[in-house]
View 1: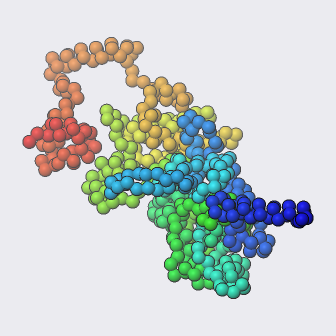
View 2: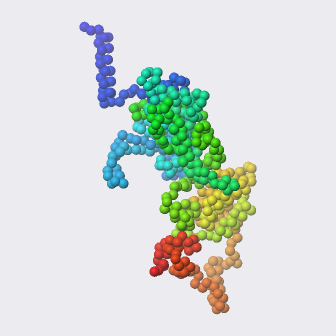
View 3: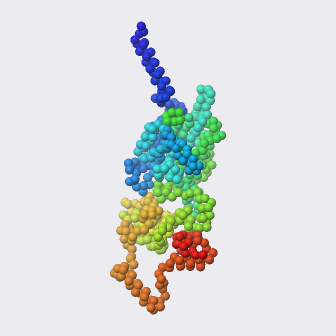
Length: 532
């Protein structure tokens, strides 16, 4: 008979063999695969990041919005930003292609909103699916370039790293990459961290201050216009870093580098790669770079160009980031040139679009309001003074550029109390009322209550409005008997206004009549009274 100990050992081996075979055939192995190149970084002593630690470095405390269990109740007037994780599940859905009207199948995707607590990152990792996130903050829940606001890190991905047949030449491309960061002549500034995503690597350069993504143009004090600094320049910088890093010593695909935008998504640290590897991050330099250091580093096409980067690192305000300049089409450019008034309201949006039934105040109302603020603004009412001035400017048809210029002067004037300073952020927040349709018109009583200013009323000598109108009507009758000339019919009708405009512009068209700011009539009204 066999020894009982020997028999039990044989049975245990058979049992383990069955479990291993079953896992290989249909089950999932519990063995954790390490990402490629992670062992090299560990052996060389580089510190490894925990997933949440890495993303806390990327999005410091307070950069993202606080979590709210009921997003419908949250007011986004504090200019709160979030990041977005894209998850690709294993479920297949069927949808109809709008272009071809054909039914297609694709993997279902989900979206995770990342707030300041970063809890959504851990939940996305725990799903075990393909999850990725860009190093960008957004103003909404949709991960589209139109909603992108601030870039927190510049990331370059390198794939197909060079390797050899022998053991010494294995992973030679990744070793050359580390060598080019640590030798005397750097190929570029060493990254803050390297993420081993599986078969490739992601190089992260963390930014000391988040850079505004939206294009904008600045004007110097001497009146000269500066160049745009937005997605175009940042993408150009990333392209040059990609060209430098995809070289024959690092990757076998050096002749066909992969160019990506600055809003590109990358695998989450701690999630699974294509072959089941755990994505790991390691600290290389640990330094946060300013955009000047990355933009002006030696060897780039920007070398020698020293713009004023303080103009690009703007305050996080909805006024600066919500209005996206767009690339105009050829037809839109023609409309801007031919119909400047209409284009200002409908294409360039330099003037808020007219509402049906709205009217324009005289510019003197705006100028008088400014003088009132200069002479009577006090602590506790300065912010509302500028809020009401912004809404008044819109009602008077003042352009946003002129309002911004006036607000900058008023901000310096209103910052007269050392204990209660009036900051630049307060001024930008008040300027947002220019774009707020709900606060376009305010009563004079409300303006006086919130601003602390007093405005003279039209004198009626103690009479009510009804009594005053009755007196005016009797005055008109007396003037008519005496033959005093006045506009007896009151306001001219739309029919008369259209006929008068056609007499003054014999060759004018309906579109030109609508774009005439003095006429101020809608398209249906112009068509109705246009005649033959």
